[in-house]
Length: 277
Image (tube, rainbow, N blue to C red; front, side):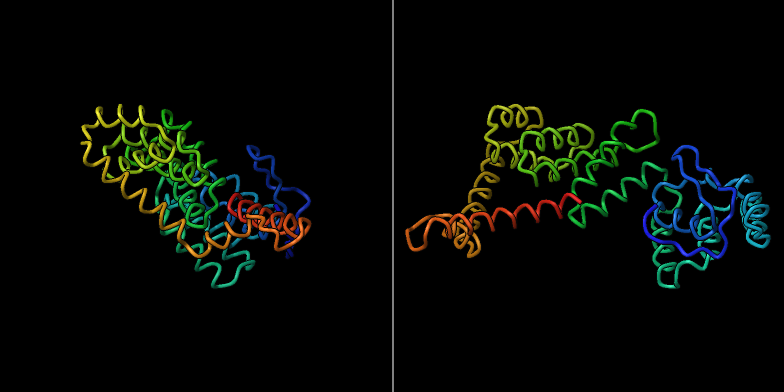
């Protein structure tokens, strides 16, 4: 856990989460743990052992009774989680509202389905490295876990998007092809074709077109679109300025020129680091 947590009472005996090797000494720490691990907490986390610890070690009889009733009624993990978070008084109303919305979105989804939702959130924030790590975990566990073919196809599709953002067109095409093998989709086909064009993977594109009965006209239509978009990029004001800054024309001394290049490279590095967080 990170940060400073102000605790109303810190017990001598911790509640231990064995699988993560974590000790939790107070209700505030427990609320913090739950709040920041919404996507990974399962219904099994809430059990009579936790109820007994809350009652006997943290001396919170009312909370332990509420949690016991949730377990007896077989209530959802979301209700159990919110009961503990609210009892801690560690989060304000807006923060609790945020986690309630998230729990409603998650619903009764499986752990893998929740991981997919979390990865999607990372992608929306352009945190592609974090999203890719989660997607790889979901793919690795596909045979053992209850994840639908549609969801796995979506995972492969998003992995392709991530690789394309990294200019890894061959890898991206492979991901799109795996997605297409599970569920045939026109958008996935187009993304595969675009990656093959950008990566100059013409033989691979030919095999794919034959396998999925894609006409030459469709391929050429997409190729023309890629060419047009490339031209638009070349004519973009930002690109023109960037290209001009990379050309040494003698108007500045070499030291100043190399300094400008270093500044551009550092900016690109910062953008990349931000993306990968």
